[in-house]
Length: 95
Length: 487
Image 1 (cartoon, each protein chain N blue to C red):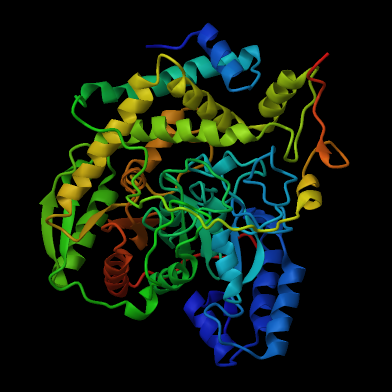
Image 2 (image 1 turned 180 degrees about the vertical axis):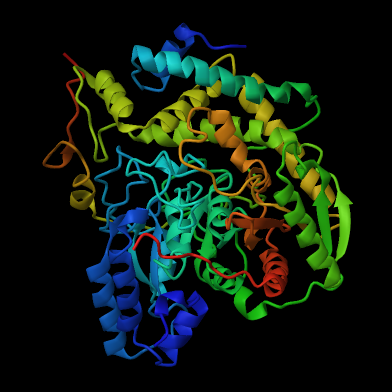
């Protein structure tokens, strides 16, 4: 499998990263070389092997059902690039 | 008078506890040195005045009972520090001031360690030379014929700062070798603990199933002490392990008699420089001479570890980094609508390597490719883990070199991502299998550059790992040869 410029366009849309023409050329070259490298895995027969998402063998535990009062609204909002009273401001979504 | 910055962490604390120096004198000595070391570019943010006032407070209170009392410690700029800028060495987080403290750093300050600053790294910890940082290159205190070298990455600032005596010890993070490889390049000790040993809460996430915080220190005892402090279960990280409180430092011993050491043939890679192979043989000999039993072992899927990593890590990163959308954190680039704002923010806010990895990660998770890449990699990850499970039926630890080469020059691998990725060929397996591993400086090559060996341990058996490393350290007697050329 290899990646062409249309695929780059599609991925950049999915990743929400706009790319210039120069970046597309560079990405096409780099991503194909990375894909070629990772495709070594095809040599292995893994039909009977289970996939693992994590090496942790710890069972998940329930957290205590208790109320913790955290009121950091103002502090947290200080990191927002644009805000109005208690809200994050984003470009208009609905016309 | 002793130069306090030359002391190990254990010695620093002993000095303060035994009142050979005040906390203020100790921190002051580091502040002075840091102020003369801007050229190395280790720090993204310094917090020197606060550090001095915290030290004064400790001296006034006259209580010197805590485990890290008075120790000046800078941490990788990936750990969130309350009210102090945390950038992940990125543009997108360049103005981010956390409202909370990471669990690992909280544990340091609870033991009266003193924060002196935040250390440079590769952007979002993605890199092996610290060259992807938004805040410029970090210089290795070791040079080759007066030419600057990379400190390794991604914890390059941590490595150089520790080697150059700008912090008494530090904590880095290791997703594929980011503690151990820079430790090897700068002649210090770097320990990646077992996955789950330390809480990941409050650390800027890269690849959550691989990320682990760990100590980078001047010697093995310091690493043991730091791990005692930073490890432990945390209900805020569901993957942190419920283990009894450790006492690694107090239990450390110089004894490898009867220890079974595995030497995996697959780590003898093509084009490995002779000096690295010789180093490996020296390590084997040291352990053998001290009564360890050496066994040849096989980890047959080793060559597939890097390809597996370069599917899993970018996949997890593409998901973790989706949160940087120009709405909630620092940097935003405007656009005519919401989607364009996202796309411009992320395009202008992320650097080349980070974008490359998000794109690869997005691709391998996308519809039609998931099974061929991501699922396949998860299966091979299991094979790699099973290799170690099998090996550990016969051996207690595994000995390999940490890196295929010593530190290299700037720009050497920046045009070829695969060449850069090969730096992690010996370290990445520990992350995929979740195992603890330590890098230990052994000697200098003919050019005066540090060379290091790596030990892998069994899951949650950091004690054996530390004991073995300590025994080797006692034999090799590695001493810093950093000359203060930048001052």
